[in-house]
Length: 104
Image (cartoon, rainbow, N blue to C red; front, side, top):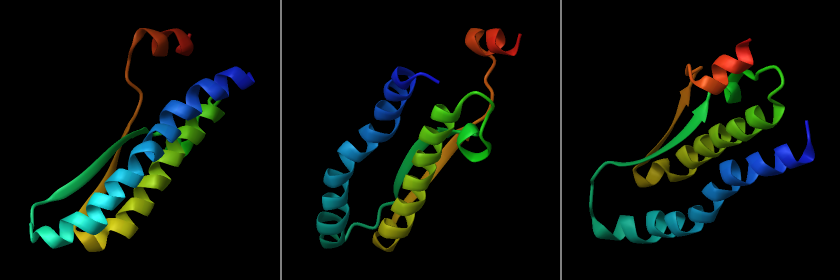
């Protein structure tokens, strides 16, 4: 695996979520309990089954998707007491042209 491949995948997948977390955390911890609002609150992240099970030749992709799953679990534990649910949707293989070419 090339360093450029790893550098190209990890920042958009992992870092982008951390950029928004401080603002979300402030609104969850400070604003929501004071509003008296009992609406359902949910955070949904997108991952892949590669993050759960790994995949041959995709260490960078599996690591990035696994990081998203770990982040979601942490958010669920930290923000659950404030009425926030956090879930990850982990898609499996989707038959697209790139997926078809790699199977050959």
